[in-house]
Image (cartoon, rainbow over all chains, first blue to last red; front, side):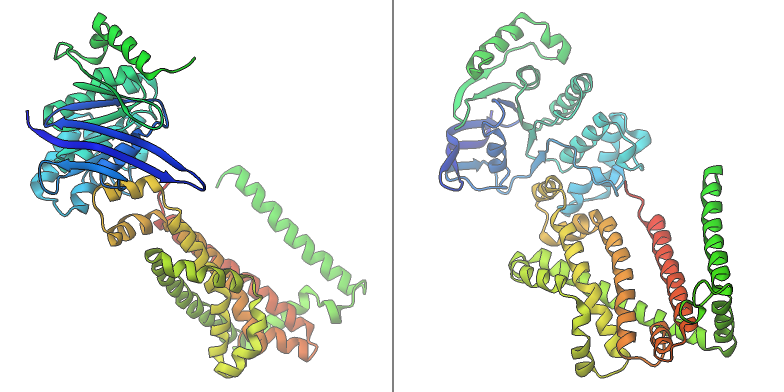
Length: 249
Length: 251
């Protein structure tokens, strides 16, 4: 497999009033094309900082973060859907295409097709206010995928949803990502979500974030999220990661 | 109209009628001095006289014109300055303390200087009104701009949006309702500015009627002027509310 993104000895410190806060310490990681990486860590451990650096929104203090191709297209799906209330669902879904000046008739057609496929057919020309939380999140995902990103970054994308919606939506999202073979990094504090979603799970320690362990998941393919959860290996992995996180109860 | 709304309206009408009747009776029986406090019937005759002579229409027009000119110029300037401040944080930081100072300054204090600088004419009335409305408009609109949802800005940044795209496709549409509410404040302030200006210099306008009435001690004229003013500001306020309902459909 081709390596798409290579992170080497990444460090990030923030200057606060009188001390330096080290958010990320010496993270190295290779991400292959078409792979889904799950990153788990306790809240506030610096997971989002890592994504922000990969997305180029903030600069690292030291270390490198190199893509194998020039000017890669990066899509970032945020914790909230961040849909624009004054635009229709279709306009929202094509926002990225619009801003990057790559909107064509064909790309719009593809977006429409995706919207239809994911149960949003009747809402294409509606405003987001008429959608449920799960539907909004689907639109947000389609908006991210519309630009055909080289890498998709998901930052706790389902944390605002209730448990049941969360299960179905994350299942849908994962299917769509697999289908489009989009390289993806998903950040979550939910171990089960990471296990269902990813091909590889990276466990980060608490501040400063260091890579504690990386696990290759070998669950049988083609299982849905509920089926995966019933596997005995799933529970074993869950317990292993839980111990890694070292959360005191 | 619902039953509830009719009820509210009825009580409002009754309250006004009761006030007018009490006022009239008090004036007729000599309970209050009608030379100083006027009376509804006297106000009515004054109004009819003003209408007959055709003066009233002219005065209203003059005041309205001043209000609209100052309102439009003020809104446009405030909007442009807010955009400049949003696009350039450096300029915004420099301007910040001055805006705060000017905002708390009672603008009427500048009246005499304005007359000297621009001459005792309509120009000084407009300048007066501009000074009253512009600072607070800038502050309101700019504040709306800088408080645009951070997450949405981040989203735009992930799509490599330019600052100009963020402004036109996110910041301005997201702040339409802020802009409209600033227009509402703006219009009433413009009114204050215009009347202050007309008090200082003018040969026509509702402010002039009120001031002239005081000078010749014709209290009927003064109170008639004030009543007309009340009606005018109500009409303008309603107009903006209608526009708001029509064009702002966001939640």
